[in-house]
Length: 199
Ligand code: ADP
Image 1 (tube, rainbow, N blue to C red):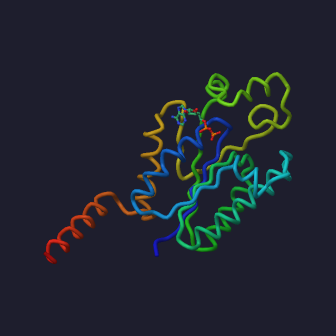
Image 2 (cartoon, rainbow, N blue to C red; image 1 turned 90 degrees about the horizontal axis):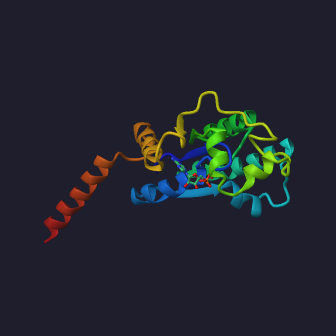
């Protein structure tokens, strides 16, 4: 069984966590990686229904996501977490927990400047938050603690989605968490050769 991992995307709302997840998912599946996604917005509608946006509730939400990520990744699954996860301490707590269970934890800081986010304003939330209509909005009226030493830094200010995804795939390959593409090609060739023998 291959080593499981948790690929943890942290960053402000609209920075590109979900977009990158959607870009990576088919690429990883194509390579035969067992993969599961825990998306912050989705988790909040089921696993964490009823939780709000105080520090305490946010930390509870992240601990729950971390718990599920740990269960899956210790069984060889690759888990992608896409959640703002603004507090460093609880992210580091989840990292320790996942690693203690023999899986890898790969923190990806999905960075984007506030200017970019306000001009994108995908969900129309930044303008409201800046106008004071949304309390506890991360990056505007609530803190965001950027990772100090993430395994991967991607910037949706300066990179295309494809470039950021390629950085992540490279990291996973270099750290033996997924098979290198050339290895996969060799496997396919070997299968064909085997098939040829049978004919
Ligand atoms: P999050 O999941 O972090 O809240 P989303 O992925 O929902 O963010 O939104 C990011 C938005 O930014 C999308 O509309 C996406 O098309 C856009 N975008 C522009 N450039 C990039 C990039 N390089 N990487 C990721 N997203 C980008």
